[in-house]
Amino acid sequence: MSLTISRYKGGRNWAVREADTGSLVVVTVYRKGAVEVVRRLTGRVPEPTRRQRRETFVYEAKNPLEVTS
Image (cartoon, rainbow, N blue to C red; front, side, top):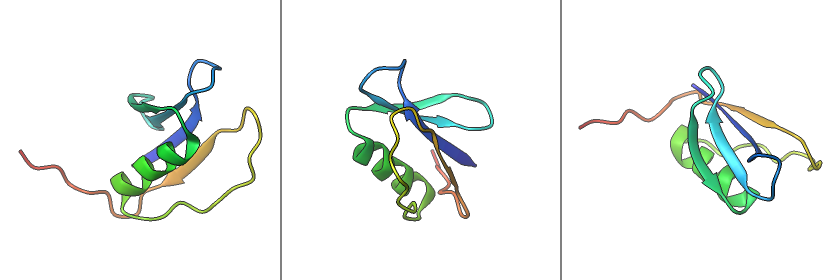
């Protein structure tokens, strides 16, 4: 499972999406919030990257959390 963080519709919000399917997971106001969502879903802390205006961040999950009903 890999997740991407990118600008949502080119605006000021941030979207977390599944890289394989492109499915939208969550939209946040701040990039730090999107990084925290990725951290909680993947169970690891993403490495900090240099920020650029239109940059897309990709994080690989080593041990994804399993959701049980």
